[in-house]
Image (cartoon, rainbow, N blue to C red; front, side):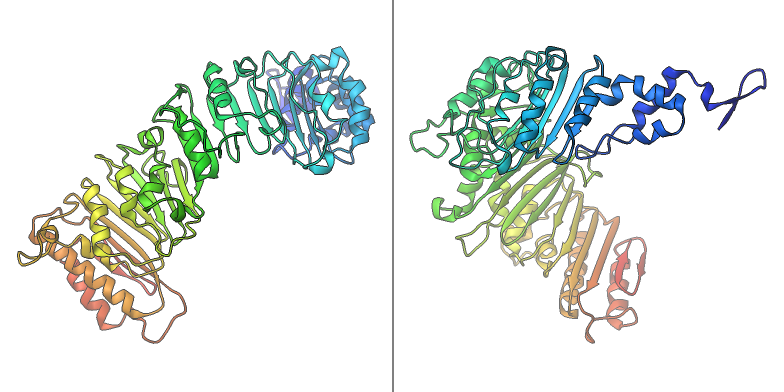
Length: 518
């Protein structure tokens, strides 16, 4: 590689200043992920003697130390020496007992322990040993991020409680390690993640969680997936008032647990409506503890959760035979990046899955304009669909994706009936609806005929009632095993359907695997 200087003299890469070359090496050395090995700068040392000198003199290249089961202690010692006074980031993955024993004299030295900025320990059950516990007890005044993920093995002697000597700790992630009960330990945290097997040894309770969260000055991320306080299932646990702890700076909240745990923890929290939510409640045997599905759902949509789903402009809903999933994207077009995701899984014990109507009272929105129904697997009644559209009167776009059943009742509910029908069937639902997209998977022509027929009736009746004209109407159908009775593009049924729909929209096109009218 050559460069031209202002004097038109040729210059090689060897003429780069050592500081700039060191910065390039540091960028190259960034690992692709937490599990990557930070050795990518090692080949650069073999290019020439000059590069080797620069690499060895760049302390930051050696400060990210990642030790695995086969990593030699000599390599760790070499990295510690080369890193000079640079802040250390340590990752230990499934190390043997002997390896921890050999490392402790190196890490416990004052000139090393005071430089540790990030410590991550990931072990399986065989890695829990007395040699690991002194690692937690090191005086690390510069520690900002601590992550300990251990698999708890019942019966092993545990002396793994964390010390209270991390004054600069900003990020804490624990699993399999007893969580401290002193609220002062958490005061400076920005991110807290506490998972399984952290509460039993010190009997960490819901009241302790309230005290801990209340002591944190500026918590921005909270993850309590698989976290179970010591008394969360006890009958005598007080039902705390809603919003005992307010987290005004919270940007992200994640929890995945049983309905009981989710309800108890969510009940004590209050946070801004802009918080990114991910709530996954396991509803196993919920029908045995609650009279109706609405009673069970009410334990998920507590005031703090409900505030995040009110007055949204776009919503993605999936309701199968064993789950309910609601997603609110960050923007109406960013369907792959949800700002709110609430899932209810495993409706075992109930022969009838919860209907959409069971969730509607908890997701009101006066501004909803974009509704996506994803992976509908069961045919639902016209009355049930009417309840959906009656709740979201401002709807402008309806999108049905990956439907695995007949969705004709969706459009039957949107079709206003004549004066001889009941009053609730005469009302015009979603008068602002202007875009409809349907993607259905079918084996026979019967489902397609029914869907297209309901679409024609819906568009015709709405036009007569003065509803907004459809600007876009798209129907995509996919064959699940092509059969002889499935309509093809040259079939008269397509000509009739397209002819009637074209009078209600601007223009239409048709292909071998899809009918699209725009």
